[in-house]
Figure 1: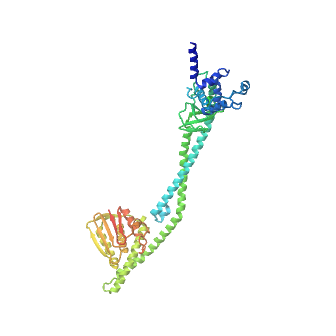
Figure 2: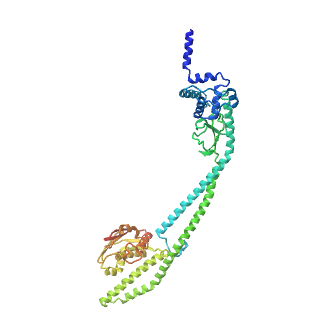
Figure 3: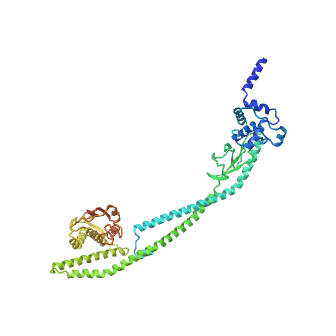
Length: 108
Length: 396
């Protein structure tokens, strides 16, 4: 039974997306949820192309100047560590993030 | 035009064409000018209306932005329903012009404009500083009530008509101003011809009557020949005099239509020209059908025959022939003359136009023929082969 549960966990872990594994898992532990970051990006960059590009630039080279967090939060939490994901995986993760929270197609 | 009436002058066809061309050109530029003014006026009124509407639409846009802001902040807490308003329709677009959501009637919105009119709808575009829900452009659409347009069209009708009338009136005066020197020159020429003609009448009549009196069959052949030459010369001047009278006093003549025996009239005129035929040794061939009676002005028809015969003699060669054929439907006069080149055929009925300038004359003969034919409702056809023959056919 124990073997089966371990197998199930391993399988689920293998099936989880790059975004789920590398982004959601960490952000869940933070007081500010991941969607809040999305709306801040949207507020600043408007389109899908520009938003995704801004996120990618920040994750590859996190700096205070690139961050969309306000200065108070930045001082408290600082900037995150540089992502170790490859360009391809990073793009895939960001795309999933965009598709999950984008406004287009969700308004009635 | 009073000048023309006073001096019995009619503008020639080519002059009328020039005037018509001037009038068309002037009208074209007048309409073009009016069109330009109309478009400018229309655009200025449209911009004025848009300027007024802009204030209202800007308020609508601000309201919409406030609602978008609320929805952005509470996107995961409230129903995701796009804010609507009865007074206007709206749409939101991102920074790369991708539609986020739209209630607009048109899908094609020019986001680079500030405010514009399209298909009777006014579109106002406001750019956001903070992109709520990713919105960079908010588009507000309202229906144009068209009041300004009705006002513009009414003003077009009123002021356009007034302006068009003024411009056309100016064109008329301008045309008169341009024509004045030409009219004065023509009237001077016509007056000269008229005066000369008047002075010719008495001496010609005197010469002709005295020749008739001097004709003596017992006179020797040489004297008879000289008298004949004088008679021909006098008749030539007399014909010219008659032609000029016809042209200069044409508007004062009253048409007296009567039943006219054409064969008899032809024979009479051929007899009148017999000396001319003899002088050029022209053979006259007659094929005259009996009983051809037309209801025409006899004097007019006589003038027509005289001019046709006179031309047939004038442009004939020595020892040539003239063929006169009369049928119930037409009169045909053919001469063995120099003929007329094909490209000059259409010009021969114009006044002062002469296809062959080697022979004397003013070029008024066929112009008179054409005028009489027009007055009497006759048709004229000309056929000619250069250096061979010329045929003039008058049909009724």
